[in-house]
Amino acid sequence: MRRLLQLNLHPIHTTTAPQQGLQQAVVRALELRHTEVLRHLGSNRQSAEFASVLATLPARQRDDALSLLEPRQRESVLMHLPRQAQKQWHGASTSPAPRRRARTRPSLWLRGLYRSLRQD
Image (cartoon, rainbow, N blue to C red; front, side, top):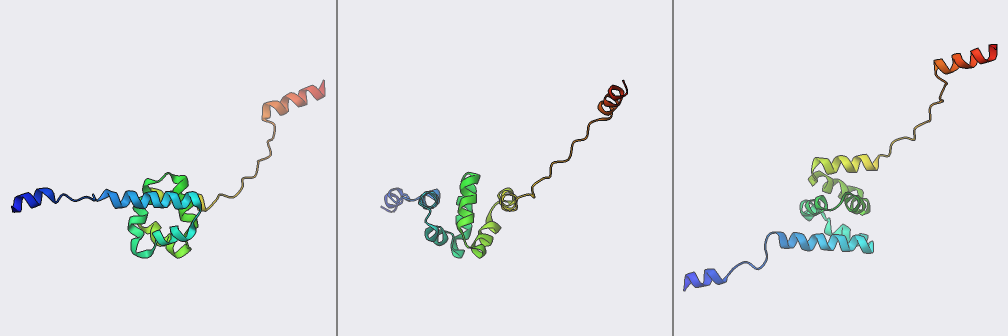
């Protein structure tokens, strides 16, 4: 009898099922731009799970979700993200200064050509 009960009591939920539900909730909240829902999903007690879900998302969605979080909450989630994702976020958040276009000076041979043409 005990063996029969053990065979019939297979877990319905696997370990990935809650994470898939959380991922679907995050994606849906991003689509609908529900910042309150994202902030709730990324609350401090669940920041490790939330970070693991964000790590599976494309970079654009991950950056979008992180930008909608409060700064303190964002930092706690970033601590749980893989290093590569952290670097991508910090690289995206700090935009480089606009580059000045260097004045292009004619090369030496071109200047020599101009001089020789002027002399003629």
